[in-house]
Image (cartoon, rainbow, N blue to C red):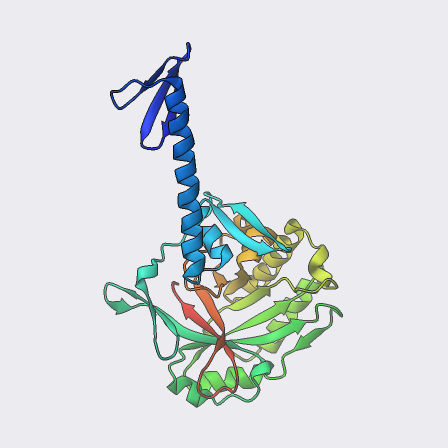
Length: 318
């Protein structure tokens, strides 16, 4: 019986009698092999530390450095610590290539190209926070699709509210030829509440046709008093599926929105594989490994016709 031990670029074979042979054709004493092991470990440690130092000096964040060292995990900064979530190999992965991502030097907007042709669409998502919107100016600035907030629930009070600009934004965007979907910002904690959210948005949309999905925006609110903090992964996943099934049963396209923490730690994605996904992440990378259709890549974008910041989105795949 033999044990194979890596020492730098060499391999040391140690047999049951502790005799040592190094697979480079030479023989070494046990003391010499110990020195080789110590040296290899020290060189490896120095190499890792130098790599970390170089990355940080070049402007990389600590979490981006951690991501590069642990490719088999999804690294999530949450709950005042770094969480290492193993990648679920049973889930479908996306095939996006960072080399195909084009960033406009003037606007910072993203597009995606394959075989020399742009295959993505440029979009935004808006709510009453954007105030009055000049949708013709938005269209002229290249926006192809928009998601409009329809309904939101207070994370503390639980009160369900229709966005005061919802209908105005749907009509304004569609009038100039922009494809429209809507989203519901949920803070539901029960099946009754999530069905109330679905029913409210479906009633609101009577008489209107959407080109894009109704989206369940499932978000964690960074507040210790948020009513959804007590939900388990199973609870949150079941509520999400309940909303999406209700929308689908009503004849609309369902979709759900999540960020890295929500997708990796707070939802069971294996229960939601049939539904399209909208992912939010604000770094220039395709780090999220699983499949998704839309990427919200900025919350500080600028578009003609809108005062102040607006979320920017890229539709990557159907």
